[in-house]
Amino acid sequence: MTTIIDQQHASRAATRKTLLGTGIGNAVEWYDWAIYATFTPFIASQLFSKADPASAVLSTLAIFAVGFVARPVGGFLFGWIGDRIGRKTSMTLAVGLASLGSLMIGVAPSFATIGVWASVLLLAARLIQGLAHGGELPSSQTYLSEVAPKEKRGLWATLIYTSGTVGILAGTLLGAILNMSLSAEAMNAWGWRVPFLVGAVMGLYALIMRSKLHETEAFEGETASEKRAPIWPQIVQYRKQAIQVIGLTVGLTVIYYIWGVVAPSYAATVLKIDRGETLWASVIANIVFIGALPFWGKLSDRIGRKKVLWAGAAGSAVMHFPMTWLLKDSAWQLAVAMSVMLIFIAASAAIVPAVYAELFPTSIRTIGVGVPYSICVALFGGTAPYLQTWLGTIGLSQLFNLYAVALLIVSVLFVFTIPETKGKDLTH
Image 1 (cartoon, rainbow, N blue to C red):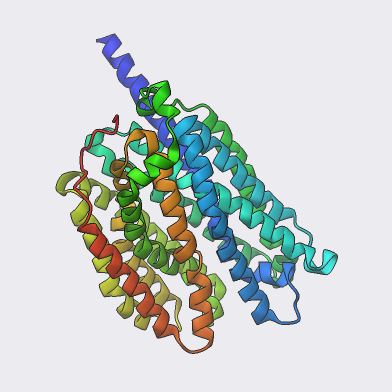
Image 2: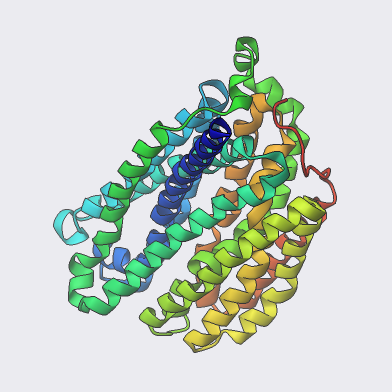
């Protein structure tokens, strides 16, 4: 009896270590990515010329989009590392690189100090973070899907967006606290740098935690010849699955960035809602999102992935226009609109890590997901904030909304092309 109890304790301890190591690293990556969007107005005023504030904001958002350009490269590089050297190694390197980019932004001299080189340093930091983030998601979701019990893989997969949202929430809360505690002068001078420096420190801790994780049994079970098999022939062989990843992602990535990341900044800069109030509205909505994720994950383990994916994409498409019309000039409207949308977005977000992993064999699982996913996010998710802001400034906001709904419809259609993968064995 003692031996069985000891084994149970050891198993629970190993599970906690796995979830913590995977989750904290993912949270740091998302935190780094999200605080850039949250602190866009401050970055624009400090690292770009103040002669044209509107142009500075658009330039800052453009660099946000440029950071996505590096993501497909990161997806390929870290995907190759994950499929050839190990999931653990790929995850550890990715979080370390992301923290380096955050540190660079936190200590970057202002435009007033070094001129245009401040903008160049910002661009370099965002490219580094894009490279890391392009590798983080496929590496961590592959790792998590392979170590999860197959009957609970949908629930375990929710850790990716749960931990990521915790990272976003941490950045949003820190922004709200700084906004309340510091004067406008202090925020512009140095307060906006604090979240990036905090991200660098958290990244170091995550790197240490991930270095202590064990490799997955699925990867270790592969033979040496399987690990050395050429990548490109396998990519070609599984091109259908790669296209399915793009199709499923295209709607989710745009609608998530609209409502989950950029909405508070958009509400403050375009709709002129108080910046502090928009941050607190975002906190409320993201807490709702975190609560919805495990519900959808558990449901997918019971009724299947496809039904949940369909509910998420179709529900988001149906509710996007009503929630956009609701959002006009008040923080409570922002909180309600974000919360409603994030409940439906959570359906897809909760389980796509499991779905993507279940589409590919072990030998190409990380890179097979990483490359198409990163390309899709770069082309559509990365450009969404800039496109939304630009079209809003010229009075064509409804055109952007039609674009978002059209992409969600594409994702709805792609749900019908994938097999039901609930309970699939990932050791092959």
